[in-house]
Amino acid sequence: MVAQAAQDPPRVIGIIFGPPGSGKGTQAARIEKDFHLKHLSTGDILRAEVVKGTPTGREAGRIMAAGDLVPDELIVDIVRSRLPEAETGAGVLLDGFPRTLRQAQALDAMLAGEGHNVDFVLALDVPEQDLVDRLLHRAAVEGRADDTREAITERMHEYHKLTEAVLDHYRRQGVPVEIVSGLGSPDEVFERIRRVIGISSG
Ligand code: ADP
Image (cartoon, rainbow, N blue to C red; front, side):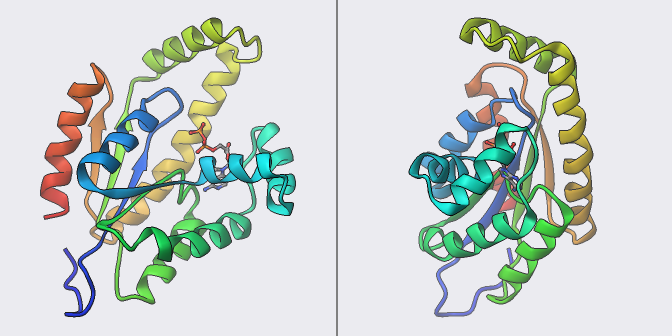
């Protein structure tokens, strides 16, 4: 881990990635509980803004409904305003951010201001066919007609394209990037995560 100034409590900044249907939400909640990392999900924050009907929520709601990404500036402002408060505990687990290279660069700049960097990146990996099956099953159970095989496959490809660029960004910086299989029971997946986080966050 990066050396800390004496007066600073040691904090861990982790990022979790996982395509829709990978079980990321379940694992993020367990990481929060077991490692005391505050779970900061930009999707959750945006959905709460939409419900509250704030100006941010009104702008983001339209974009999210269309399945697009909200502008980098908007999401970076949100993270910048939430990070200091979230960082007061053992650390933070970022979920859904950074999604683009520009967001990753903005996060680097925020952390560099405190002499810090990202400590680990976790990416849940589930073969595309398993993901499509899980999501089609979920769509059928929830009675949604819009989650078609084509739409799901398109979201997967978009996810992989964006995520790979961000993962490469961190690999180039020497940040540990751990690819963890998301197959099996939630307990099995969490055990794999526990092992790699134990090493990465020292
Ligand atoms: P998923 O269901 O794919 O895990 P999230 O819950 O993380 O998605 O986010 C839901 C939506 O919120 C995204 O489709 C996007 O419109 C918006 N969003 C969330 N995080 C970001 C981000 N970092 N950059 C841009 N848009 C975002």
